[in-house]
Image (cartoon, rainbow, N blue to C red; front, side):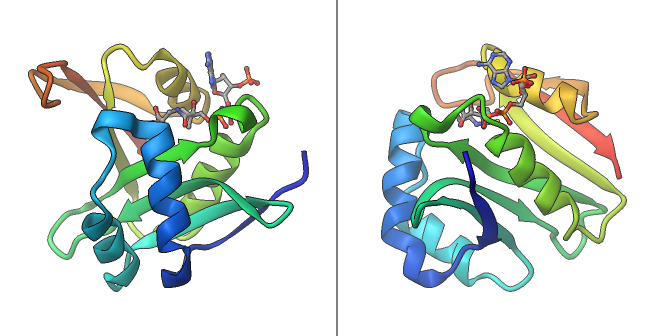
Length: 145
Ligand SMILES: CC(C)(COP(=O)(O)OP(=O)(O)OC[C@H]1O[C@@H](n2cnc3c(N)ncnc32)[C@H](O)[C@@H]1OP(=O)(O)O)[C@@H](O)C(=O)NCCC(=O)NCCS
């Protein structure tokens, strides 16, 4: 599959919300949070585009007083998975990060994402208990860039 990784823009808001709903279901961000993400200076917002359609996205934040970059969201359309899009989005985002370390949280049960992050060099560094609204724990995973 041929796809491009491009900056996500304000005009992508509706499509990103639809994709967010498909990918994250009950954990999906509200549209206002996606809007804020697209408008906040310094956020790294990238989309994967195949035949004019957005099939994936990643959002990484570098907060002023946080020494680590943090991945806020990474998702790939269900029908386009296992074709390297998630890995390509993360690698592209890493190319924009100025911090020396990157961090993310992932559901304890999300083996696909954990395997992806391991394959990219992330390691589990701590557990956050009851992190998600349904009570599931999160692994915090980190990578030195
Ligand atoms: C996690 C997610 C982003 C992966 O995207 P993807 O485009 O399918 O991932 P890739 O094709 O780049 O996979 C890269 C590697 O990750 C691992 N991986 C990805 N999906 C996997 C799965 N379902 N089972 C096992 N390993 C998996 C494999 O090591 C894979 O390499 P391989 O295909 O050569 O074996 C995608 O499954 C997704 O959107 N899931 C729902 C949202 C989500 O959980 N986001 C992360 C929240 S922390």
